[in-house]
Image (cartoon, rainbow, N blue to C red; front, top):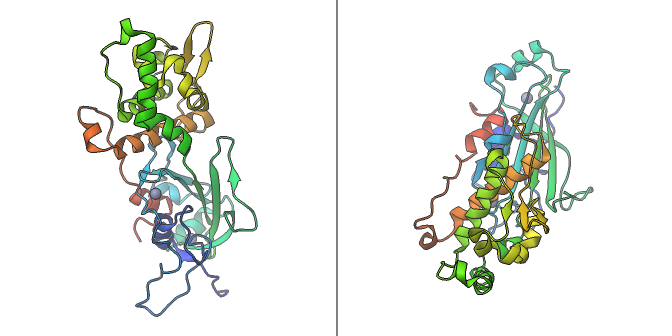
Length: 330
Ligand SMILES: [Zn+2]
Ligand SMILES: [Zn+2]
């Protein structure tokens, strides 16, 4: 056996995924996902110097529509991939873990390797501070990538990670949740159409966020219920302002299109094919936005949540990350 290159076991990688926060790197500049902490005497804490005290203690939740986890039986066949997609309910960073067994590994080799703990060695990637800078998507998400290969011969397991910044940026978040901005545009709408809107309540941020979530949920999941929204619709006007003008930037970013002749906003209209896990970029985008809105809804204060009903957060991804890394039984 050749000497092992520095790497980490799959369960250790799962733990490091939870600890790594690209927004708060440690003062040492060390990267927990591309570098391997040296082995200290057993009582030393390996996370020292690798994790900032300000790092988000991620609570990843699974995006069911974008996840496929191979069963134990399927994993013994070559060419099988697992894909876990998740978002942190606190900082809204997105995570994708893909485990792939390459075609070259034959079924016999795979089955003879079954039961070993993958030892994952970092191979390449793009991240802040690396030779190749991070990628930026056309939606403005900063993406870090990490690729690993299992060092056991003849295991062919390869793992890729993608870590993406939130889609709803601070400017959009302010438009959707700043109580003063919401009040300002709702009052403007009421002043413009007092006979229709007089006496209606100024929406709270949670109502604005949830209205937007419902429009997008219908666009993605109930094609038949997703219709053009008249800009004189009361609920729409109170949440997004007269003709939605005040929120134009965020609505257009989300794929709404304004029809000035009809005076209505056409919601995004993704392909209705629902192949899972989603492959279509527009479906993935809308699903990601809906998940972020759900996280934001859950972050609102209890006083706002009273009387508003919205779905519970999906289950935490802890076991799904282990499963994607083939490490559930380690
Ligand atoms: Zn987080
Ligand atoms: Zn392996």
